[in-house]
Structures are given as structure tokens and as C-alpha cells.
Image (cartoon, rainbow, N blue to C red; front, side, top):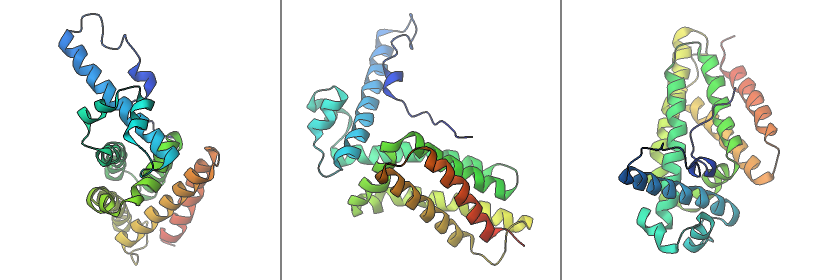
Length: 224
């Protein structure tokens, strides 16, 4: 089962009845500002995926979002800030869900399966986002170190805790470093997402990869 995160798309933003008939003028104004901000972020994801971060101009994001160039600067400091926001909000939301799964009761093996399924499942739904976070963010070592590292560490902590739980339960090998195993899981899934985003494979390829990846990971981790 693939989880659907609440990334707000254009169809949601164009729903004029969403606020209800009694919504005040101020509430409509705030909602309109939020919708415009989301429209800019969604447009930036598409443009970054198509042209790359450095080749993209702010004017291209504005055109795709259907706003004036200057409107971008009402919400974001610059193009870097747009990319940072995409990463922190979109991937931050994903990691929040993965942390919930990691902390949930149940067998460690089942939680690892669920984490892999969710991570690749979300990227399957958001191909452009997959390309932005696996390719575009790497184009700036400064952004990668300053903004991606904290989220990456949260991800590793969540996976490592599941593995440590499995070791305590006796279901996973206790001669494996949870942190190292977490890095291997992340590295494998990151590589799968990268080649999928760039290679034009069908979405179903990620579902198959999720199943096969989980089987490989658990074969190495499960106590015999």
C-alpha cells in the first residue's frame, strides 16, 4: 500500500468552493496567498526538473506558475530559497511520516518494509520531485551541507532505531551496526530513485524495486 502525502497540487488550488460561502475577505486573502505560494513551489519543481537548478531563471518559474516575476520575491528571497523550501517542506513531510512508522509498534522487519514502500511510493507519485531532490540539490554543495544534512540525519536516526529495535527483539542480527545498515539502506534507495528519475522507467518499476530492495536488505539483516 502506497501512502499519499498531502502535497498540494494545482487541482486543489483551483477549487474555488473549498473555503465555503461564509469565508471572510481576510481569510480569502490569506488562503489566496498560500495558494499562490504553493503554485510557485509546484511550478519550480517542474521547471527545475526540466532545466536543472542552475539553468533555471526566476522568470521561467513565474511564467509556469502564472504570476509576475516580482511575485516570487514576495514569498522567497531568491532561487536558492525556493529550492531550500521545496526540500525542507516536501522531504521534511516525508521524513515525518517515516519517523512515525519507525516509532510504531510491530516487528522491525515489517517496519523496514513499510519505510521502503513509502519512500519509493511517494517518489513514484512525484517524479519531478524525485529528480529535484536526487539531482538538483546535489548541484550545490553549500545547500546540501546546510539544509539537507539535518533531514538526512533524522532519516538515518529513524532507520537505525528500527534496526536496533529488531536486534533487541532478537529478530535482526546483533553483529551489524544499526547506523551503518541505515546508511546502506538510504544509499540503495537513493540510487534507485536517481536512476528511475533520470532513466524514464515506468512508475511500476519503483514498486518492483521496493519489493526486491526489501528482500535484499532483510536477507542480510534477519537473524538466521
